[in-house]
Image 1 (cartoon, rainbow, N blue to C red):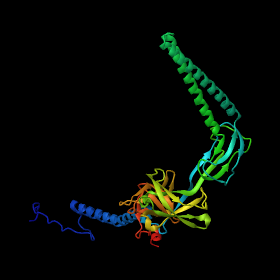
Image 2: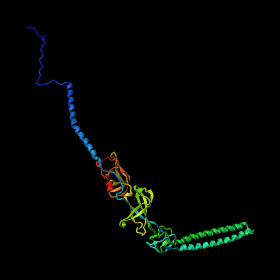
Image 3: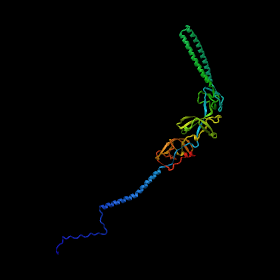
Image 4: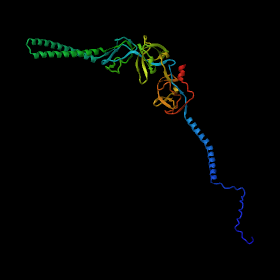
Length: 410
């Protein structure tokens, strides 16, 4: 083997050697897996940090919205009879009254009664001096007498000519002319007689008399004052018949059916220490007034001693037993708006509806509601001035009791 080159013998590969702790490199799959794990961990970290904040923000938004929804207390209208009955303002009127004017021109000659005088029917109150009317009356009498004389002469002439016509002495034309002259004279006489009667009737008005028995409540002229006939601004006397009296008052529509003819009703006179007299329902208007939703009632009250003066103030008292139910609300439910009185009603979906109402009597802490709400409605207590239709509210857990109902129960 000396001198021979050994070239075909393969050399043994050296064993791999590792330097330190070096590991083999990752492949594509390893890196992808590692990237996915990293992204997942990052998302989990983000979710863990963001979700609580989102939840807190959502809860804060809900809380803010809840705080923005106003919490209100509501009350239902009370339907009951007034606890102390019903006191309604009444107006005292005389049985009949009249303003007395002059029917003739002239001057007041004299007056024989003054205010407070009790007079009988057709009793003389005053006399009027009428010089112009007196002259016209004298002239009318002369004209009527002359016309009557002319008629008498025309009649006599016509009778003679008719006789002559029958005898054939005068023509038919002449007889017709005399008959026509007679009828013309008759018409003139009748006209002057009618004019005389008119003037005689006017002269009778020189005596001013009472149209009915009563009391003189006004005298507006003195002796010598100029009087102009039929001048409505120149009242000579005012007379009233004070026994019996007529008393008028208005009943709310809700109680209109409680009033009956011949029903006794107490009338209270506050200026006489609360004196109470019993009157009787004579009639009603049988119609509800559109502007006030009330029924006009007329009472008759005997006043033999004229103790109750006409025109005075009184109150008609209707007892609770004679009344039906009325609807009332506390005063602190009312909204005073430009379009009138309103209340806020909470609907089933908790939205607000503003309703126009019409009120009746004021009972102090409560007020009668004539139109606009029913006992089943929920009306807001102490409504805010900014409240509008469509607002959403939250009703308090315990509805406030109706003060109107509390008063009624007492």
